[in-house]
Amino acid sequence: MQRICLFPGTFDPVTLGHVDIIQRAIPLFDKIVVGVGINASKSPMFSPEQRLQWIDEIFKGQPIVEGAVYEGLTINFCQKIGAKFILRGIRYVSDFEYEKTIADANRTMDPTIETIFLTGEPKYTSVASTIVRDIIRNAGDASPFLPDAVIKSIRI
Image 1: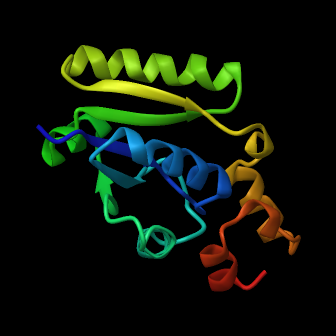
Image 2: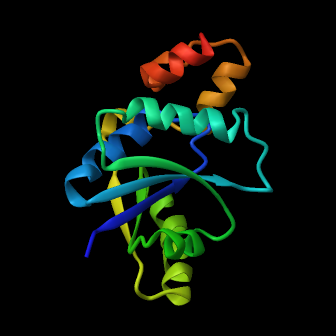
């Protein structure tokens, strides 16, 4: 059986922290689907198509990584694509507390899907899409936090 993993998020935009987690997860799984989640309660800065394009460009040399856009419960999307693992990145203890609550709910809905936590590299601890969007909105230089594919497309 193939070890399929979903790495869900908004990826608005994709940051170096996201890339770090995905690259370190590559040896662990046979396939990683980077799921761009559509969340009705959020107003993204970038379109789902743009975020998917970044994922495709950043990981074009990694055939096991693919992007997908989904809406609704993450656990339902896992079931749809056959993923038995959900990947989450952790920067701080507070991230773990929040993510564990979600993982527990997901486990209740489908005990066959396991959540895997990877801690981020210390150099990416301060990288958060919310902060990056604020820097971009205010004409700051967000390039230290972003992969080249994102920098080129938003021309910061």
